[in-house]
Amino acid sequence: MQTLYDVLVWLHVLSWVVALVGYVTTIRRPQLNLAMVVGVTAAFVLGVVLTGVAPAADVDLNYAKIGLKLAIAFVAVGLAHGTRRRPTPNPFAHVVAGLVVVNVAIAYLWT
Image 1 (tube, rainbow, N blue to C red):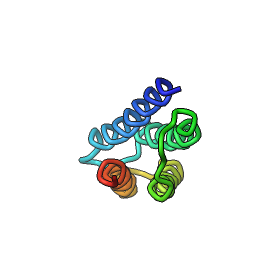
Image 2: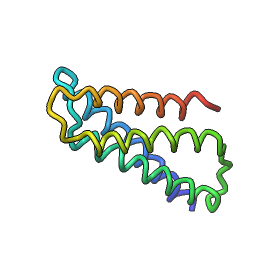
Image 3: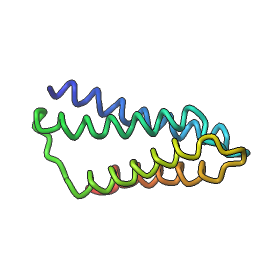
Image 4: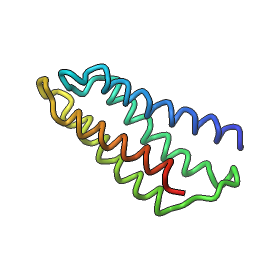
């Protein structure tokens, strides 16, 4: 079960990277492209799956951290899907990218 957990963690991290790379590619004329939307959505879903798999892999969880990250990711997914069709420049792309950076910072700085 630990191997599955580790693979899911790497996929989760990769999905955040996809979201950030999607933002960087459109930073001059910001828009919510498919990479950002799919990356944020995949990271959200994988985070929920990781929370469910963690007890079977004997991983101790910090539920306050998970709750905060879940709330931030939920807002990012909602904004990404809800404002994707806005014309460029779409200022919500900056907001979603900021939420991604905050979520990643929480993951690595909160011990």
